[in-house]
Length: 406
Image (cartoon, rainbow, N blue to C red; front, top):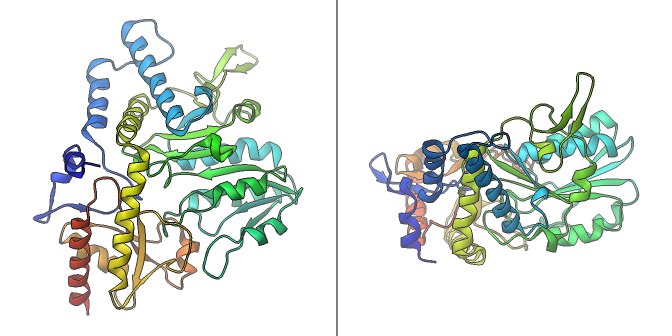
């Protein structure tokens, strides 16, 4: 990885914040965008802005080709079998809601069990809570060991014929913990359950192969992997998606409409009602190109190295606690921490004065953060353009902020 060359591809990294060079460590919330992606949006709007799938004129044909080309890029990126298995959504939250409202409404019944983990983002908790309330089903949590890792042995004893769905994050957006999703899916195969992977924190950072995982569904958001905001992906196995009813109704998701009735379009368009987010879908395809050119193994190795460097720095600090430090599972480049006296919002505001951007709060994982006896935490999260020198700046400024508030 040529970090110097990579950093030149991101215009925002030249930004000054309060007179300081920007040190951007909020990548678990959203990543920055390379010029390749930014230029793809400008190119669409300047040169071939048009609606897709409906026109025979030159601009519409060009827009349709580029839109569908991006779908193929995403399919290749996660190694799915068919382009039809890639559904464009607004984000991962919408993707998970589609599963809950379509597959869930038809297949989950009274007293059935849905399993998730204590690590989940709200978007992978609330849809299942609501589905279980509506269906009088049971939402259960996969138990953890004393070190805070998934207890696979206890999980095996809890599942059975009533288990209908298992939805798990691939990597925690709070702890950076990489969950044993493949092992969980193998266990799930002994039940009727379908498996759902929230891959928002894994697809941008490491090689992900849906065929190797053998998951039934997987979702992620484009803005966390160098792509634009407002574009997400739902992957599903073809046969399962084909049996599911549409989520939204209207234009483009139909094959035939009469005054009395309608018939649905084929996959993937059955789930893409109305004019899609054309420009941002195309931009996501270019983000896939950019990451593929670097190599996802290289991306992952870099982030592990930077993540371990952050952990080594925190071990020498007093008064700070790293959340999930006892876990033996592998970690990505996400570190959440608390201070025994200084509030996370004061830490975040203080760092911002030095141009260091981190995230503070409950990180849309309120139950997990509160399980550590706190209401909020600070989080630093890295990506391909972050350097050890930036981590040194972050740690040094963090100590200055601590000293000020002490």
